[in-house]
Amino acid sequence: MSLNWRAAAEKATHRLVLRRRLPPPYEAVRIYVSSESGLRYLKPRLRAVDPDLLRAVERLVHDGDNVWDVGANAGLFTFSAALRAGSQGSVLAVEADTWNVGLLRRSASLAQPGAPVQILPAAASDRIGVATFNIAVRSRSTNYLGVTTGSTQTGGVREAQTVPTVTLDLLLEHFAPPDVLKIDVEGAEALVLAGAAKVLALRPRIVCEVAQENAPVVQRLLQQHGYSFYDGERPSYGMPLATPPYMTIALPA
Image (cartoon, rainbow, N blue to C red; front, side):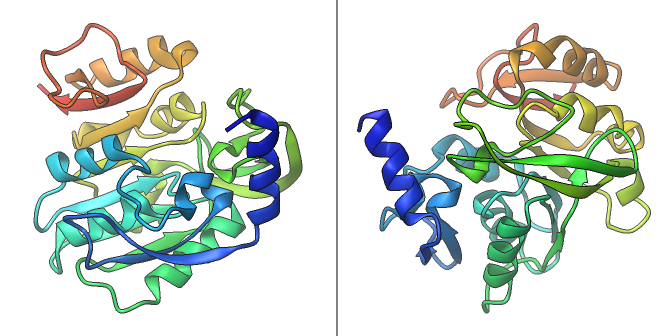
């Protein structure tokens, strides 16, 4: 599909909301989706939406785990992890975009199996306060904090929202500490980890998208807590890497 046709299709379907079943082995779960999260979400089956992320759920989330999903988007990781964690676990979805928060809340209102899901409408950062949050023209999956440069795939900024910012260390005061931490924040991952010293000291299993320019800072912050890095885009994570790749699986040594 050409970029012009893709952009037209995205714009024409942005307000279309559909209920979709997750792919196996999570087919007992349904979530509300929109092309606002990417055109691939409109396909009848979500098997090909993000297989690397679903593989991370399968490998990292265990029965009874507490899971934090930072940058939850439409909830693919949130609700597949909830099923995997089971009724004795818990899931916290942190999402700044009010549109995506609405989808997450609709999905959470369904009679879903697995762990209960709590939704926090806020942006994670290195400080508590307020910030500008830019809504991308193309897909809301590429929204980004105004203090970062964001992705090259935004297509421009549709609008700027003012959102509250929290640190992950603050969340420890209110939610069960995470056994698994997923971070997908479009270039703000170094800020998120900088505000998570207490969380990292607990050494949760981490899946994190890392922009190339942030890799040195992410490497330093995680190595301080004894993490090793693996490539989450490989079917087998293989040997530890010297530096964090784009889809980083960070495990305590």
